[in-house]
Length: 222
Image (tube, rainbow, N blue to C red; front, side, top):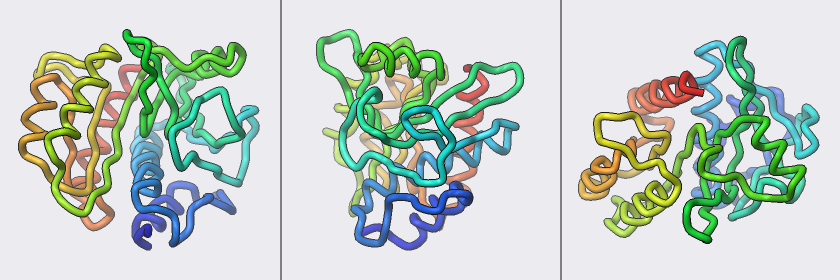
């Protein structure tokens, strides 16, 4: 069950939406994905980006319908956020869509930001995005206890297959966001350049601030 603070944070980011598709009975891990998207929107707006809720046709909408499980960008009438800024390519942010890596296996991204032109190609062709389309990837992990090492291994495998692994000193397009902690997970994914942001909840504004800084830096690379 989702906490009221997570729902309130999502509602705040989508203040013009009359419906979010979430309620108090929605699984907390699903709402946490929406919360991470909300933090991306807040970071983008603070850096001069215009963010609009759109439906699958590209039309502005006031009714958010987010995926509650793995899906495909070109399939279904799900909502996404369009981000635009003078001097930057138009972007789209999606929840729960698959991306094709180097292997034949498509990976689910909890949060994906890609160029609008790439998303349009996916919708026209019926194909999933490819790894070179990724501007920002975030895994949103909401748990009742600290993260276990297999989660870190899964994130590393995804990062390697999608060419997001980097040297630790280089900012990767991949971020693991969680409400918990996990020292061994952090040590593992940091070796491959994946950023680890821990204890990210509405009750931790300092953590939210640092997550926002990462999102702004990644948006500036678009």
